[in-house]
Length: 452
Image 1 (cartoon, helix red, strand yellow):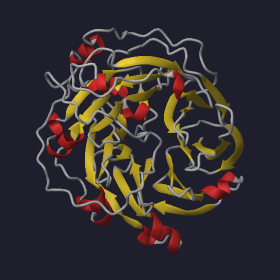
Image 2: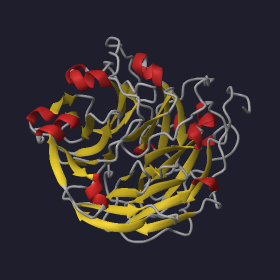
Image 3: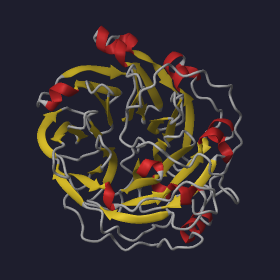
Image 4: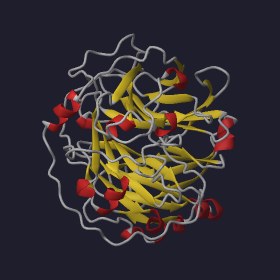
């Protein structure tokens, strides 16, 4: 059984620091009408199936706080709500498509901090003072000080802490994907160098936990269980008050085989959950968050999920709630979807296909949603910056540049004020920090075909 570390031999070793140059690509992104997009359209296409809407979603639970969850949440803004993509629908990309490249953004300053082990995911405390990194049976705690890169403070033994994590919006609890659910730790104790395991969230016969998301009110935790094929829903508030008894498990959602990525929708009430299913004919499904928390067996709102290329890994909603982005790892592409059509017409929801480097995984919105950063974890060993306006309008200059990274860049976090981008480098044992003011701004909002 594969997991989202990827199938087959890794193209990088487990040692090494930031490379001086990115590897020679197979395909180069050119200005103009989008050569890279044409390449993907010519590639193997997955069969589209018509979807039937399975009822109207129930209202979301109350909660107005910004959602907490996997690193990669939007930094706000997102002036793309009024865009109406023109032209024919893009094709769903197949597997093993070409590798794109883009000019290096040389003014994007970056620095690194060494993390013992294999850093997978990063979460930043709400007060911005600390960064937490899962590193393979350990949790690294770093201080976010005056320097660009965080400073290592503690390495805590947490067996099984080798996948995603999230921190509650009040900064009190860390939820780490592990085994058949998640481990819950005291964040304040971790900041002081103590691994205080408060309890386990567990699904009987569950296995392969990958990503965690937390409801806006911190009451519920959602965990993708890749190997057992479930999305687990836990009442975190009940678990903390009851000593993690059996009633902490609300239930599981069957959202497709091998669920990996999960993210909350960007609408004001965060009514929906998006889930990616890993595989050569991968998909992205939409769940009613309200039903996931009250009637999980009926939480999937469409009978047929949207095709999402080969091995879709992470999913990220725009802050305005209009668009949903997915990294298709083995398609070497980032896919953009119309959020409304994902619920009502998923077979025709795809709005953009952006060719990127090899094995894209992590996604992070920056520049008030005008840009998207993707971590290319394969031989490209870099980050790419996508102009969301250009991508949705299917115009040229969809990828504005690349940033050097260490081996195996994976998942993202943002500092509290949004000025520094953090990315784990799994193969190099590093946490990389990038100053965002060195990245040129993205396109201003405007109609497709205009300069905005």
